[in-house]
Image (cartoon, rainbow, N blue to C red; front, side, top):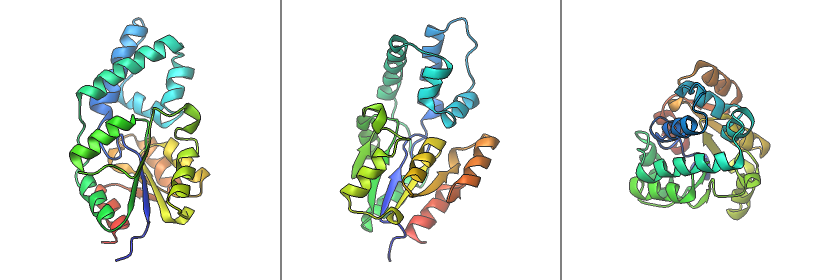
Length: 221
């Protein structure tokens, strides 16, 4: 059986693993209470909405206007949470990419999580490490939504643009894929905000309500 795509370019948080409700959001709220004690905290849906547009870094720098020192504190709180909690993969996700790899596919990750956390999660839940990872530890101009990760993946594995599929739950991944003329699939299984669902459905090559639909596309079942 021939795979539809030779390479998957996967987001991590809320695409592969269930991490925002238990890790990223509560860590952000804790940091916010310390740094902005007199301001109203943001809800989970508001947090997800900001991460969708304009993106997490813009939320910190442009909307809340964290200083560099405050940003450092927020990152320290976040790292404490990510170190202490191993998130679960979405049901059927690890099995899908295990089978994809078994059939000769290339599995890569482009995420705002750190490389070592991604490696930990894949080792525990999938039994292998991704073929390439571009994480938060990179300088800002090499992180998603900048095209650098996809350009490097295509170059390293000698791939045409049509041979890769980007899978992400949020807009930065979609923008990155579009800038590189790579097909984009929205991981709709983590969406619950109607505005995000509608925009992702409208602007993506594929919109998956379930991991099973993703499985059927990439494995041709």
